[in-house]
Length: 407
Image (cartoon, rainbow, N blue to C red; front, side, top):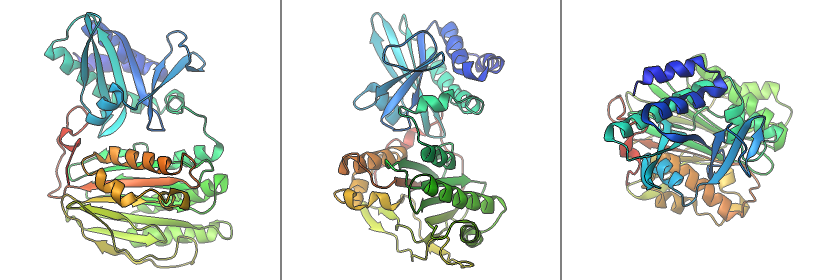
């Protein structure tokens, strides 16, 4: 398959037609039909088939666009997303192919197609390549249209959720040579102001997880101020202590009286493996090492916005190859989530990719609360492999060796 020719067709198409251009090129090159793209739903429990070709019974509509929501549990779609391996199944004298659409471990969705015959090994490789190329197409195209964002949403967002969504990173998962990182947010019915964020540069990984006081728009606006200050400080080249002080003063000087945000800031030096953190009134992280889960002993200081002009203590915590660190907000530990043993759930998920770990923890807290979260429940999972700064081993956007990594 000439991927360059496919991308030329994509570039010539309007942003909203980019996926259709890839599908049409794929159908033409290998004789596939019924080529469709399924995007991962924000809930993490469904995929959404996007199409503008005719009416789909039971689908949502947005102008000419159709969005058909399909539950993931127990389906081949869930299997492909989890394993990041293509599914090839004989069907009605032909073959159905379902391939993951992934970039740096971030499972954007799936591409599904039917061939009227058994595909060759070369054609299977071409489909994998096309699916990986489609990940870049979606990433580029969604800058120019709301259709993909609309497709993600099985239920409409309230204003507070819309604001909160803008504070989260564009990709919830990042695989790199020395680590894999994944985040997830289970929103409460009344948005609680949680956020997570990360940034990767040549020599270090920055991450944060925060929880603004209050609910709904006021909490979302407070979170916006804090996350904006953290990003601004980081992009100005401030070190971790300076970022924390700058964010704290930004809240103290600009937020309404009584407004504060708990937060945990972390910086990992990829050259030395040295990790440092600042804990501003936040839930203590958990570490899974050699099958044992324990709290990291980080001293807790006042939340951001409480003490003007405060200097925060930068604390080191040891990282060893094979460590899994999970960062949480207190929504995981609220009273109506008390039946959830987070440490036990973390231990049970030892063999899962971090992307699946955060989904499993999110599902577990929903089950423990009967779906009635009183506060946002947010989590980040960092797997640290260590060693020298290096490139990752990839297979069409994912690292196949990280699908399961026993600890």
